[in-house]
Length: 389
Image (cartoon, rainbow, N blue to C red; front, top):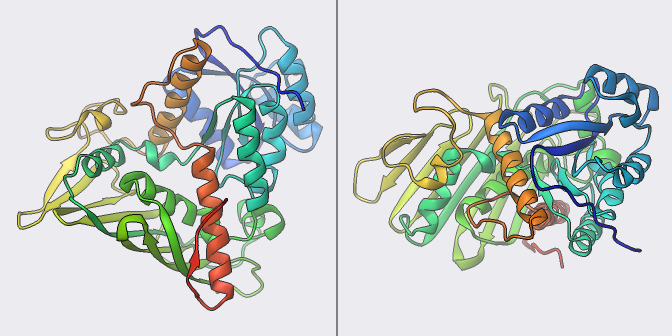
């Protein structure tokens, strides 16, 4: 297979295409909003549905030229790669099982890919995708958007600088309640279908966000785990609740809870990290606050864009303290970091070290986490090694 390469002019807005994300698709709209917040992208093309007519209607909704709206992503990749003003990057926002197939034709032509999480629906596809990314030379950005929150960047900076000392304990949880009952809605349909979602239910949908966040902040590698995955809603094929014990490199220990059947929890992602010198606590529903507890001293509340917050957080903040930034802005930070990386690569320059975004390797780690959790749970919680090689 010959890898072609799609070049850009290195200036202006990044010309963006989208696969998936048509009418009634929540995450597609989120990606489009995020790409526009910092004015770094222009959506110019798309294949928005597996049905050509639905794709056409969605493209019309978005005001795209009819000849830039496609009935298949293969057709889109081939034509856009030939156009002088073709797309420079594509956002893949399909259900999990289509991520590899949709990303492949664009990577083969050197078009950068921005992909929703988890990476794929199977570890085998994840390995193939990672190999293709490496061969293509194109950038691959995985939208674990919570890594874009300013106070998560602050937490990472504090851990990296040694303010917490040696990391000992990691507690992370992501609880929701929207799948407490059986539902026929579109979003629930594919997320609870192993053919489209993969082997993990809650552990794949939101557990991967939690494990990625823990790794991003601490910089530690997950080595082994013991998992108890359970399905509470009758007739559901995938887990809707998971408890996982974690063992990290360097001796740190952790626990992860993911659930979509916890009444009273809307989007309760929470991270706590404790080291030999202090601890940190952060909650997604209060994203502009980070609690810092130096050992033997009173707990301190750090707030976004305020005194005591470092450059890592400030460079991804837009507005003064007290004005909340959250989900869409965090997503936008990933898109803007991706735009900076794309322009650097097109100019033949190194990507600036402060520019951070989840990559295909992070996605591969997430798929290995799902795979290990499923294997462990099937063996009554036996400890298993986590690896993707």
